[in-house]
Length: 474
Image (tube, rainbow, N blue to C red; front, side):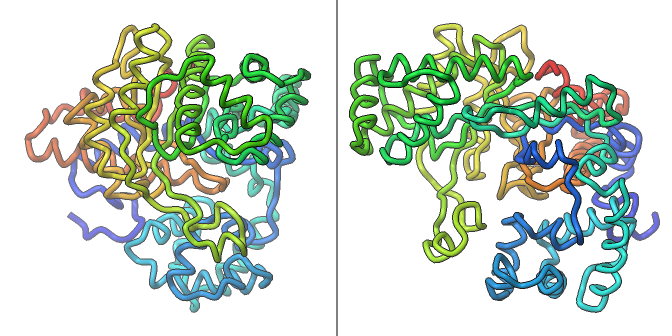
């Protein structure tokens, strides 16, 4: 066998079976990006970038975090340095990123979108800067161009209930009129701010926005729920099929009564911050209420839990949130999550559910938990979500899939998503598919599973695309 080289056709595929699976069954499959943070405005306006530094470094906190770890001054990370200065700083970091997924993602994007196979470094920075800058002037190097060239079929953005979804409507109207842009762009409901009553001022400002969006007064808890339901219906009419929740954990509390929820609502609406106990109770109660809405609309419910956010007050004051200073928390989740799922399941109102853990210790916990609430006719109705955030790398992805295989059904897994704000992040699907094929191929070569390409190849195709297509019903 020829000695493998970095990013060659058989990169990350360490056995003959892995190579057969990837090239015969995964390579070239379409992409359903069912959870991302792409700005709808940039899709509608077909955003363009002047240079690769703006494309890469404008909002990518993964890269910011890596640069800080390599000793780069904040001026060259998020400060007022020029894009060329920031690019040179990033290029100087690259030799030190070997072994980190940033190294792989950067070079995958250079190779797949720009045809550049040079390793980024200070020695190649001028050449890569000039070549990418020239190519970015081409029509294919726009927001829509990157999506279309990546064979993306569906994208689900992340949208606040108060959003008017005007950019989604503009994209849809353009496509109905015969646009060449064929990617389906759908909103996804992200109502986190409805649950966050610990800060009364911030929560009330958001509730006032919700009232304006729904065209109604919100002075009671019933009115609050009615406004949310009105916006939920609006999202459904605009094509939404998924919701998404980002929470610290699911608190282990009893389901509050309507009277208890109303009392907390009234106190916070009057300007008093909720106590920690009240905040936990309100969060749990709202997850139940919102989960019911999702079930009644036949949506898929996504729960992301486990971060401890804005750890560095210094960076938060300087840059704000989403600056690369979040990390993995270790709060308990099992009992609260079990109570939440059971509350909805016992009322026949548990929607299709995907649960993502940030702490990899919880792969086993969730692998066991999801089996408690599976229910036909949907295969894999309750999903262990793909390796998320700090886990979307080789070890994290393999661990998630191995535990899912041992404790559930890997064959019913809905696969990878980008969870990204970057239009060049789609090679991460290739990264995931290569890791998937290497895992299954190693099992085949070891005799742990049958060496049956038809059987295992169909599993690869389903995880790469088919399961998601069926599960979400796009």
